[in-house]
Image (cartoon, rainbow, N blue to C red):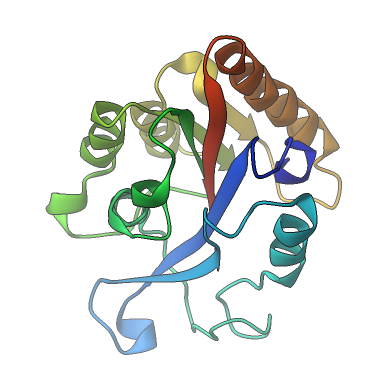
Length: 198
């Protein structure tokens, strides 16, 4: 989906953070973990963004990443991270449309109530950041509720039934939707900052 965006110095900039968490299986206690795939300030060409995407490795062992035994889902901490880390929204252009696209495969496992997912998503909205939630292989009612708690509205929730090699349907929907958001804003304003995660 990101590869379909109009990336450029004077157009859309994209920041990507992959997030997970550590628990007892990784000799940690409820600890947020992330990798910065590409900061907003660097993503000024489509080639740079594509290279960052192609080099991404899942945090789990065996995929060449950070080799976590059991990567958990820490969504609230991830939202907090992109709101406060200097490589992400704090470095965004003030006069641009800000989109936060969260891609997740389940409900947050964090035990830290300070980073409640809805609370963090509301914090993003308070900073005029529109939140789009994407759920992959989401089955449980609680997981679906969390997606809706994250997103600005029902239109900003996307779900795909399973992991598969062909996610072209989801990619098409997300690409069209985010491009519509960018174009609608761009007619009267300035470029877009998009943060995608997980």
